Image (cartoon, rainbow, N blue to C red; front, side, top):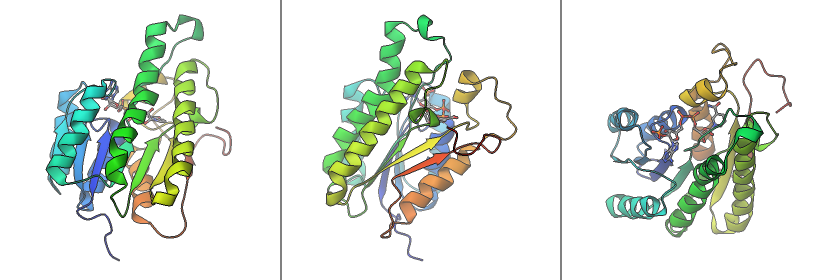
Length: 243
Ligand SMILES: NC(=O)c1ccc[n+]([C@@H]2O[C@H](COP(=O)([O-])OP(=O)(O)OC[C@H]3O[C@@H](n4cnc5c(N)ncnc54)[C@H](OP(=O)(O)O)[C@@H]3O)[C@@H](O)[C@H]2O)c1
């Protein structure tokens, strides 16, 4: 089978994190050139970069995705280095484990800035380049909380609902230009985030980050006439069709 991803360019945010680093490494195995937008944790970003560089060329950019200038300069650097962008994975995110009445305005703004405004800025910056690609795709890592309200996660839920809305609108706005915009909505992936936001969940039965990488890989590799808009994924112990 022809490897349609080879030498294409992928940009990922939250690339030092559990899901982000697993997806980056998987796409690297296909020979994609990879731009990692990292966060505050330089060590994790360096580890993700080392894993990617075993397979392909990589640019790692540490910074804060809530800063518009980080995003615009990062996208410009990516295009200068690799000549374009074919795939954008909006994965950086922050969760919450707080009663609603304890959420201050600053925390509300922070969650919205990371989970909604950053993908908005990334997509806006990447779209002119995606339009030139023959295999353009955006994958937005939403959540089961995009589909339901979760207690103690009110603002996280609101922000992920917003991201899903953004995803659905962009998918409809750009499909005629050949840009596929997908939502992947997992619940209960074994990463640092869930260890903090859902300490009640036991590690057994959690989804592993590599399993989310399987899904993103499937969406990008299988670019036939059957298009998957969104994928809702729950951990094995959770009742099906109950997000
Ligand atoms: N784990 C789950 O069960 C689950 C379920 C549904 C959806 N998700 C979504 O999956 C995505 C990845 O999360 P994860 O589970 O892999 O957790 P994670 O390991 O904590 O990864 C989150 C990543 O986002 C980055 N990030 C956070 N704030 C940032 C900022 N202001 N600027 C730049 N980067 C920032 C973090 O970087 P630093 O730490 O280096 O700052 C980290 O690399 C998130 O969007 C999350 O909402 C996760």
